[in-house]
Image (cartoon, rainbow, N blue to C red):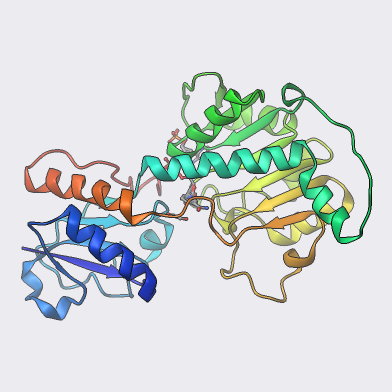
Length: 311
Ligand code: NAP
Ligand code: GLV
């Protein structure tokens, strides 16, 4: 049997993925082009933004393994076979990277380092009030693999952290709440709200004018999940009116963020180019290999997507 890598990768990305996958899967036949082997021989597809239709007509396909954590694109593609198990990327190294990004963002907001960066542009010498970490409550929306790592890292750094998820979670050092009723409380008590929800029909456009109105006046939003969680026009209006103080955005409705976009030059917005937690082939390839070995040995697959929930 053969493993198809159906991925829209740059030459540099291939140069790191290919040797990492070969090293992690020394006994497997890896192909980058499905024409290299008869269609019936492909039983696993490793995917990252596959071309539409690339996974059709593979009668032996038994596993689709995403190389990315977010799978909303695969779920929205009607040519991705719906009856084949779909696993997503869950890599502890990415959780660690996400925790670092969130800590940087919260420190930057808490200690006003983003405001000082704007002041520097204007050669302005102005000292702002210095708060303690325990005076800066943080909300983490989504307590999955990334959200948990983020919530714990922030709690360890002295921030009072409330986490929110669909079902009740338990996270050391964090007040975990669940369900719609708790959401207003979580939003209305945080100086910084961090989004780590998956993008699903229930969470698309989650951060809109109504939700911003529930947040503390002057609070900040950190979006590290998906751009479509945020209604961009509502965010700009909330920042311009002072309802929100600042936004740190790693993800956008259109990526790359167009050069003409209002976010680039906005003094209350910090833009990152979708780098909060990059997939690192050195740690991700062994994760992929583990699931492939599970399939080969008839053991349960890990990190399967529940298509009915959308994550
Ligand atoms: P995950 O493990 O699937 O966790 C999702 C969490 O969100 C779970 O706690 C889940 O609750 C909760 N949730 C889902 N739908 C909800 C709803 N309608 N209401 C309330 N809570 C809900 O996801 P993850 O791996 O942590 O990834 C989090 C986000 O980060 C995703 O959007 C992913 O695409 C994004 N991401 C971004 C980057 C980057 O570089 N910016 C990198 C990787 C991932 P339950 O536990 O109750 O199911
Ligand atoms: C990155 O955003 C991912 O989904 O892996």
